[in-house]
Image (cartoon, rainbow, N blue to C red; front, side, top):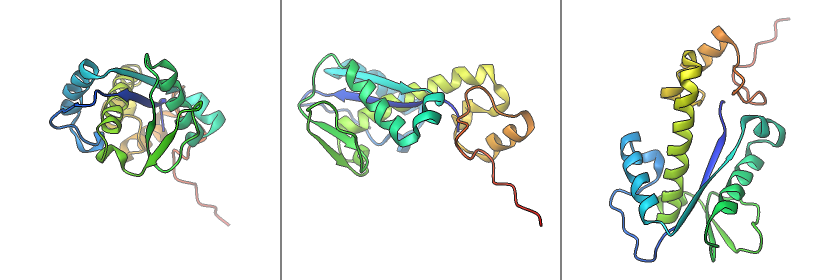
Amino acid sequence: MAGPVVAAAVILPKKFNLPGLNDSKKLSAEKRAVLAVEIKKQALAFAVGLVSHTEIDEINILNASFLAMHRALDQLKQVPKQLLVDGNRFKAYQTIPHACIIKGDGKYASIAAASILAKTHRDELMQALHLEYPHYAWDRNMGYPTKAHRAAILAHGFTPYHRLTFQCLPAQPTIF
């Protein structure tokens, strides 16, 4: 409900092996942080792309996700031969062939590595925004729609970082 959408692109060496590498959602923040350092050391190339909350409101979350992926790819120091994309949809990037893989972050090391870099980067951004807006507990919920986050919106209103096109609060019932 708040903050940017973040995507990462990672090109790994052929014989890459990193014990503990997995879907970022299945790892603790501490484990992700350790793995992110090692991924950055061993990757042939990596980059992170962001789309701001205001851009998300303008183009919708799906298009923002594609744009964040494209922005990450734009920054790579090496051109990939093929793109492995986590999920079931992707907007083609230049002339590079791509494959969409559902739950790909649990199947391919490069997708898992990208998910870790994207998640750690976004979490760092939300930690910094938490210092500016501590009432929203972004240090714990990272801007996701938890009960505490919704209660903070009710109590304190929206911040400049909230995605205003998202239903951040339950719809108010109509009384006849």
